[in-house]
Length: 417
Image (cartoon, rainbow, N blue to C red; front, side):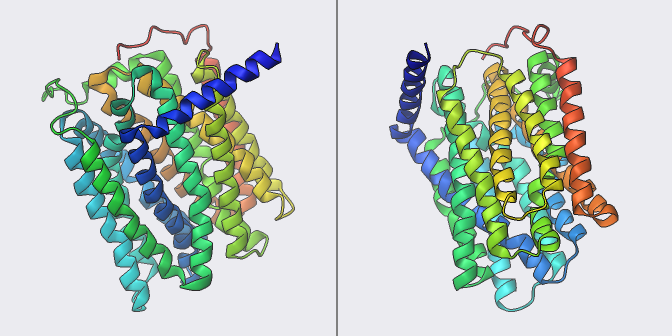
């Protein structure tokens, strides 16, 4: 019985990868990969730069908070833009503005004018532009594939993101060892250009939705989204992961440097391992049977992620930390991708931008608050204890969500796509 199942899984995997050969989706996929390579190169360089400037662990957490906190204020507005504005212009203008931030870091570091507060302020600008443009970006995949191909498109996008998570830190390590930290920021600046060009070329002109904006109740779509049990459960799962489990990667630099006495190579290896795990997790979704309860699968994987955060907190050896983060990357990526699949397939087309913005709010906004709280905890009780508290809270939260949304009650009819 296992052999036919394996063959069907391989057939699904082959059919899924064929989507990369299509002109529009394939071009979008590779341009986004290039953009994310620059992003991850900067994610290695930025906390390391702050530590080199003498910043505390709290400032490292504050920097991560500033990157993600604008999600709480602007993501829902970004969702409205995705539904009722020209997505081409939204992406082009805000991403072009965002490109100026790593360019500013190149200038500031080169001339020795850099200070920790400048890094934090620029992270805030990136966070605001991300919040306003990412719902439009996240809504691109359903416009490039058929409805039944949405899970495949999202899984392939997740593979691309995690491949960049592997290659980006490796690139950063090479740049740090040769041209220095400024090279990471320069590469990130250049990586915006192909992404903006392809987004402008690939997206249709005009508004994404034919539905008019209800000026009296502009966020009325939120009520519809939250009224769907499957959507609500998926969003709560992602929110709990962002709050309690995602800080593991934010504070891995502190864990490596202050607890184990490791250097930038060990930190890069930890991030690369997390990316490899994410790549494996996303790849496994391509071969997964499309039938089944994606939301419940997402919740179980999120619980595993929480357990791994606790494991990282008590881990006594530096060499085992990449192993832990590898499995953590698998669990987090698969969990969030499954939740995103539920959101994009279940939400009505006229509300998809707002549904995606709520997904981004749960994921990135939750990470912002989690990073800030964890930064305070690290300052008060140390990084190990702080991460142990985070991981335990993640497991408890996911158990509570699973109890409130059992599969028997979670099978509400999907909204019209």
